[in-house]
Image (cartoon, rainbow over all chains, first blue to last red):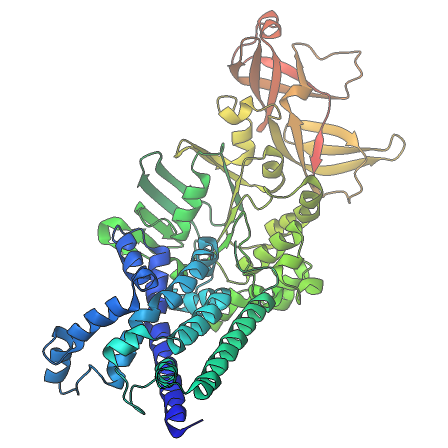
Length: 227
Length: 359
């Protein structure tokens, strides 16, 4: 692998890791709220979360580009607070990836939370557990398969991102060039051997991730965590 | 310190309203008895703080848990209660041991009243400790749920039809534990049931609930013998009498039980003289006569005074009677009642054909 490829690998891993951490921190309370609320705007929020599933990544990228540009609403605000430019930067990529991978984290979590019967939470509250304590001693362990799925899908999906990155990140080696873009570059310049190395690597990676998720989810809680 | 519980609840929903006021004695088992849909579970949930829309008042042992006028609504996790749910709600990811200790670990040391080894021993849980809930039978799950609630050091133990989901065999298996709990627990227990048999075996007091209202409350002997209450219309209606074992007849293999209204002879009971025996006399097993019968195979005849006559359907009446302070019920045909010219205050001889025993 060339030095540029190793750089792309490093950017990709960093991006996926940071994105996954942010997604778990944001997605857990959001998914919990969605699983328990009877509020009318729930449907709207669910639709917004799911939009990246159906929207062409270039559309999402296009709007993000406008928002993140120095004269755009988010980019402008960020710069007036003393930040660097967001478009064509690593921070901009993180924002784009968080939005793009949001459904892959929120939906498995929400499904897992939906399956936790209220009677467990009520029983715990009669046993002196505060709401936060109930969340960490019941909800988190009972939703473990959901967390495993959400984490791996969020990570893997960010690794495989292309369209959004191309629109808002560009192709700056060592800064915003990720693996999928590097492969595209190699193919454009007819360097098939290099493209093969990266592509086969990503293929193997995806397979390993999915096999481990499925086997982990089979092991945890033989009786299932549902009602 | 009085552990008495006063509540006055109001819940309005589209399809149901609860408007219940009563006092639960600070000791013993109070059964909450009513048909399904009468609001038993809702009342229990309101006591536990699980019904957010409830209005009114709740005082437990002098502490205010709810006073909606003053804006007091103690959240469930701050109430010292034990709640045994119908569906047990054992935490599936925790072994029995961890389930049992869940509340105990969250109770301040000074407030802890039971110690785990003793509860494990009482409920026979030792062999189950390392198992997961899905590896337990229905009866075992209920025992663990009861233990978990007790180890939470409750000031009030709420039990929502703990036997409802169990078959006859499992019920028989768990009943001794409940009776032991009844004898040993020093805290008030509110026990929801719609099973008359269960009720007479463990309850001391009774709250009758109908359409979200408490229609009557009092000592169980008194309420079971009130012919005007719906409970007297039950096929298995009958009086409950506390007696003492006073003599053993080795020749005929019989035992003599004494109570305020006289003595009753039953098949031999293998218990020491002086033991307290609860007996149940079903209304259908009591026939009435105006004179003591000289020649009859019925051994047990008790002189009573009629205190009430309530029609049951078209052809039968329920007669409630008093035998020197002990209540009795008899179900006879309306024709017989007319023939004997029964009326309130008249004296009759109750012939008891059969007696059900509850130790």
